[in-house]
Image 1: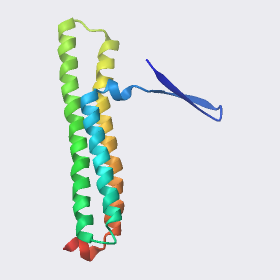
Image 2 (image 1 turned 60 degrees about the vertical axis):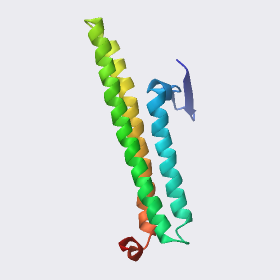
Image 3 (image 1 turned 90 degrees about the horizontal axis):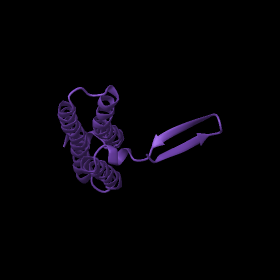
Length: 140
């Protein structure tokens, strides 16, 4: 396994697995990443168009919200699919080793974690954009 080691001022060392993206499943992790990038794009475009047109900012706000929710649901869908495939392989083995079972659960939860990360990061940007849009423009 490829690992990346980061040392902070020599006090402690944190090892981070560099291949978590591929461990979670390249297809769903890529789709969740695209949702994150789309949500960030819509948020930035909403900030840029804030001075020009509040209607465009509101539309970008809604699109960012939809992209963040899509990333969240895709993460949980991939997690459920991963759990089903892990249970299928455990069933085929008969009496599984607990380490194999724990590894399968960890891998299946990577997509849910990345989906939640996408949702939280997007929601922070959405909250800030909502604060900057005037209340009279939000009512329209």
